[in-house]
Length: 76
Image 1: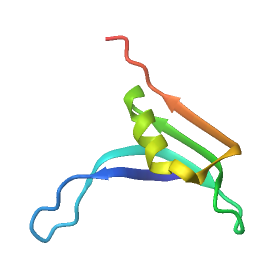
Image 2: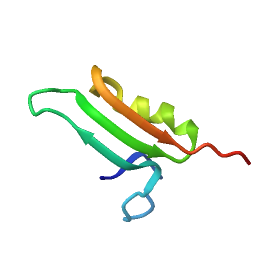
Image 3: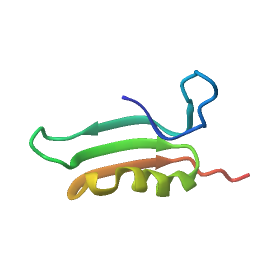
């Protein structure tokens, strides 16, 4: 389980760019012979991260896969 960066901040000088947008608590699995991700789960802080996650995964998703996104919804 770990974090997946979706977008990086601009690189400054010789420092490595940090993740500007990331999803947390990611767990993913795929079969060795399959190009698709068979299982994916992640925790998203705002609901608006769903679209960047879908764009980042793109063709790696399969109609037969199992995908779970846990989202924090703020009431403030």
